[in-house]
Amino acid sequence: MISSLDFRMRFEKELDHILTPLGLSLHDLVLPGKSGGVFKVFVDHPQGVGLDQLEAVSRRISDLLDVLDPFPGKYRLEVSSPGLDRVLRIPEDLLLHVGKHIKVKMKEPFQGQRVFRGTIGSLEAGVLLISSVEGKKQLKHSIPLDLVAEVRAEFWLDALSDNSRNPDAGPGPTH
Image (cartoon, rainbow, N blue to C red):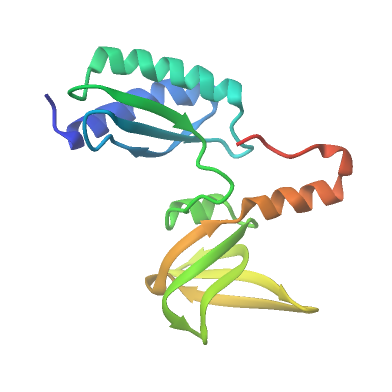
């Protein structure tokens, strides 16, 4: 039996060989806590992840896990996208999603607020710049990352605004 850290490193390397040819990337892994637990693999793509992609990845991961046999007892494999309201990793995901809608929760009030909503403008020297609209005013907030508790995507707002510009576009990317 290998340690969970050793398994994670080996699995991520092997998983890269599965995901890269499909244009996908690993967003996160959640190892099962006990026998009968759920092993969660979250995969992502800039334009969203389709069900056919998730199905193909799930089959390949299942085959890989049969070879590696990493966990004692039974567990369930769950492969999915991180979703339109995922928690974003700082700073990696912020840099990947410039221009997208987010919700920022602060550790403590900053400029009189505990929550900021807006679109990602930039990330420089540990400061996140977001833009928002309040009434008819365009606002810009410079938020120090060390005061941020969590950043959550609100990509569903981006999908709504994409569809309002092009009503024939359909429901947006599948997640």
